Every structure is written in structure tokens, then in C-alpha cells.
Amino acid sequence: MSIEKIYLELTNRCNLNCAMCYRKAWDYETKDMERFVLEKCLKEISEMNHVKEVVLGGIGEPTYCEEIEQVMRTLKDKYLTLTTNGTIMHQSMLEDIVDCVDHLVVSIDGNHEVFFSIRQFSLNEIIHNIKALNDLKKAKASKTPTISIQMVLSANNQDQMHEIIDIAEIMEASQVIFSNILPATLEDSQLVLYEKYENVEVANLFKPIRNYAFRKGIEVKLPAYQLKTERRCRFIEDQTLVITASGDISPCYRFSHNGSEVVFGRKKEVMAHSFGNVKENSLQEIWESPSYEMFRSTVYNNHYPSCIDCDLVDGCDMVRSTTADCYGVSPSCADCLWSRKIIYCV
Image 1 (cartoon, one colour):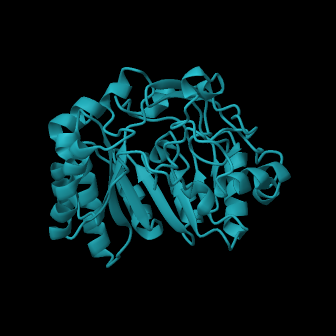
Image 2 (cartoon, one colour):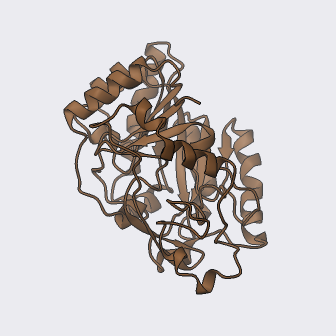
């Protein structure tokens, strides 16, 4: 199977310091992708006809990278998704977004007061930037980019879901993507809305949201709020890889950087895992390496344990990190909340 989707992390730097951001728990050296690495990636991606989509994202803010406009222009022939906080949108960048980007995903976590408390930035400025983008789309008679709003849900902002739909309507967004908070500390873990077992409270919270959005012509994607048996890795199923700002090739966002997370009350160290670096090998060579192919096959076929509902989890040392699991799989996906649809990425 060929690579079909690529997440390209142009930088791991960000111009904001959001209260809920999981990047605070990740251990990394702040940097932009080196120019020669970026040029190599762009050349290879442009020549790969089987790559259907490129997502400009990662733990940094893509528009904070000086090369962002060149990157958008180079990759305009791909289905290009840009994830952004929406704070850096000057006129020339707006022009390139309308001309090159197919899907714009803007992070907003509440109304004006809540947004400022989380991001220390005015929501009015974001709305102004998106209005300018929509005006330019109309002037160019362009249907793209389509706009999505992404919201990270927690106990602190769960009452904001209806207001986010209203904001999406103002911003002419076609979709709102809700994801759960990924707690990095035991303190943050008190804010999660999801549970292992029946969760009537959140079911009742989510129930009216879909109808409310439907009446406004807005699609919503809601995360899982209680544990289910099914496990599916969208990174693997979509034939995806992640290129970090250092040039490392990771199978998903979770393994792109060292960090920590709390999974149903258990602290866990997440270890970065790279199957190669574009400085040394081509994307295709890394993708076809035996270790990477074996890993993808293992995850796709669910040949790894489930720590979350294991009877022995409280006495197991292996659950403390993602280094390996009791089946010998490395890195370990056995505690992954993405595969349970509790955490969601575009």
C-alpha cells in the first residue's frame, strides 16, 4: 500500500500558549523545519501521485513558519488542509489560502470570555480574519477553502457547544469537530468528560447538539464519551505518516514527540518513535521499511493488547510508558485514546 495522507509539521513553535494544549506536556526543542529538509519533503510529496491529502499541522502553528506561503503554493495540486489558530492572517496569506488550501480548520474552544481565558487572545480578531477570508472567497468566486471549527471539550467549556455552533454559523463554517481533552496531568484528568462505562450525562449533553447544528446547515463530528470495544487507527487506515519539524517519520501525532498523558487516571510517558528521517532516506524508503510495514500490519489487524480494560493493569509496569506492550509490540498503542475515537484529529 502507498502513502495517501501526510501530516507535515513545518514548525513546533506557536505564537500562543493555550491553557488546554497538550504540547505543554511534550518534550521537544522548539524549531522550524530546516530549509533543505523542507525542500526535500516538498519535492518528494509533489512527485507522489498517490498522496491524496497533505495536512499542515503538528504541535506548532503552521502560519508561524516563514515558509508557509511557499509551502501552500507548492502543494496546491494536492488536497491541502491547513490547521490553524487563525491569529496570523495578513492579506498575502489570505490570498494564498484561498488560492491553494482546500480545507481550513480553525481552533476555537468557547465564546469570547472562555476563548480569552484559554488563549489570551481576542476571539473578535479571529472572526475578523475569517470574515476577510470569506470576503476574498466571494470576490474570487471560490468555494474553497471549506471551513471547519475544532473544539477541545472539557468540564470547563462543555456548556459552550451551542455557542460554538453559533460562532461557526457567523464564520460560514460547514463543520464543527468536537474532540475530548487529552490530559497531560492528574489535575487536567479531572476535567475529562468521557468515562469507561455508561455515560448518561454526556449522552444527554451531546444529544441536542446534532439537531441544533443540522437546523443551521452545519455538520458536527462528536467524539466517543464512553469506552467501546472497537479500535480503529485512522492514521493507519488512511495510510498516513507524520513528518515532524526535525524530519523524523512517525506513524501518528501521538508518537511524534516525547510527552506524558493520563489515561483513565493513570499517568503514562509517551515516547517519540521514528521509523526514519528524511535527511537520510526518502519517504517511500522509510514507508516500505520492514519495521514500519510490520507495525502498520499489527495495528491494522488489532494484534496488540487493550490496557484500558485489562484486569491486570493496576499491577503492570509496562503501562507506564509506550515503549512496548505485553505482546512485544513496540511502540505500544494499547492505551491509545485516538483508536477509541475519544480523541479526534482532522
